[in-house]
Image (cartoon, rainbow, N blue to C red):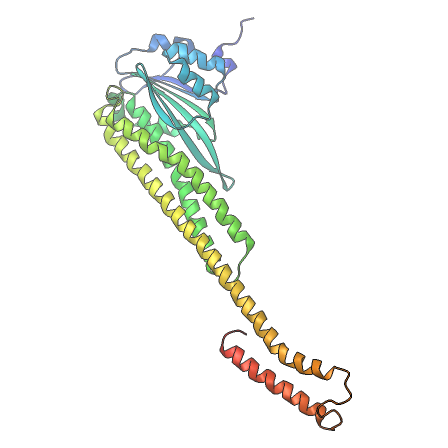
Length: 333
């Protein structure tokens, strides 16, 4: 019985493998024949992997003649976003994100770009690049511009996936601002503020390096990224700048919201203390008078006078009314 091929045994890891000819037609490709298919003028080999093991990555290293350091990074993942040149190929690491069950799930993508191939390696919360491949296949103008156009479709999809996350957080921030300015203050509000701030800090770390990566692609590596492709990459670069500006604006707004929340809580506590002090002052007068008559002395003012108690009571009520009106006018009650 024949042993299963590498493609069959790792079908979950190999999500896509095909060759595009100069006309954009897609042809099936055997994993063991990749190196033989390289070099076809005007063609492109596209391989998509998801969390591949070391054996499969070593196979990619041999077939595409990739640098072992880049393969090691692609296997271990948890790398910082970067772009590096190894001989005739580019190695790009980008952080990705998607909304899942109301939270952000982060992932990592490793992109290998050569003169006639692109290899994508996905880890964690990274959406499939099927939409990017479909977009590439449906645009005949992309085929004659080398592998840079395939890279463009992938990077554009990664960047576009951040916009729904930004929109979600902008809506959450608007809701928190309304909660902050409401009359009631809740502990849950400040907790949500801190969580939103942490989310934005993580998003900033994922999005910010993309600007440097795209700047490098726009200025260097002209043999892999042609001038015609850079027009498209500039559009992606503009989107990344918009994302960074949106994140920075929300972080500034969030800092102001947290400061405002703290100020409003402080003012509320001050108002509460003034009310407590006002009632304490209001109760001080009757307490002083009644405590005087509570002392055990034989000779007390008006002690045996029949109108003594009514007079004391009327005096207490009068003093309390005067104090109440004064404290009410001063805003202490």
